[in-house]
Image 1 (cartoon, rainbow, N blue to C red):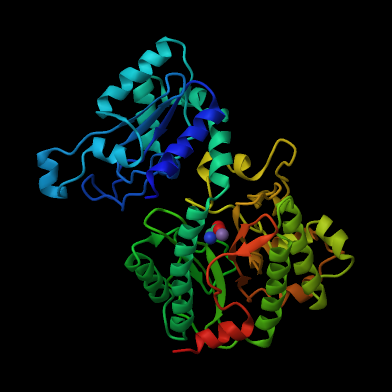
Image 2 (tube, rainbow, N blue to C red):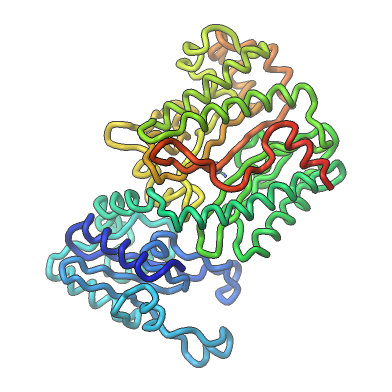
Length: 463
Ligand code: GLY
Ligand code: MN
């Protein structure tokens, strides 16, 4: 946890931004795997954790802006529970650490909300992503689940997004701690990934590193020789010489701050000539995209820049033809780069995505482009100092997509489909790093992880 003042100041600013009414923030409950006493490892809701800091299940925080009163609702453990769980600090004590003066049993919350509703006061809640929390809120407000949306507050959502988007120095230190773990995960994978090894052995070793450092994975590991599948969570392939594996993985710290790194690894320890050529294009796109990151720059333009560099490199290889700008305007890059260049990162690996991607990545004037490829870009708006974002270009040869486009003769004036056909068994290459937008430009976060062809090959051969 950060110091008490951090949480007091965050809630003070939230009140100032939302201005009136009563803010209700729900913490998460335990989530059962197969029966109630066998839950997944507890993960606190990121926004509740951001404003209330407490990493326990079954809590709710109320900020009554009009009455200038804050209260955390939850239940102290009973002696019966202590027998199984051990002693726990009392809720009142926990609240002291975050500067909240009032605490109450959870069953008092319904009455407070009912009273507020009867007085015609506004209750602000956030968009929800967990079924159990939705049911809980419906129960507390005594409304049908279908009416939850009436209480979802745009003012609160925008205020939370504005505040969480700009990372403080102490948050950046946490993100860099998560990146220290990712460094170890990535370099260990480079050593372990060999012909005759199963992907799951590498994925398991990486998860072990995250757990042993007191954190956990920030998202399910993507480690696959089929890197052309963007989010490939299958780890059952036996790796062989000549394969390349996309390793998109990261850790979060005990406080929940994430890292998100991708490297592409040659399983035999050396890239083939063809792999080097594609890797170099992606590397070039990432380097130039990183260099373009600066305050005031619209990230959709950085995405376009990356698309242009990818298309230009593929033109040099003979897969693409014609004018680069016209090709990108026609969406040619999306045959090879079907996703977005990056996203915000913080307490969630895709930061605040549960609050609505468009609130996080777009504005009233900079709207998401609905075209294929572009619509997967989670962040399009102008960057601001304090944003932490990922920059993750890639080239992916997806046989089914190539066949579909070819059958439709799509963008045929720009694509040499006979040449592309030769790459249908290639797989994919992605390179991803995490970067802080500063007043003067950017700072790549974390200690440098092998990234050039030489560095990656060396790390793969460094036993
Ligand atoms: N690291 C997975 C993603 O950014 O989607
Ligand atoms: Mn990412």
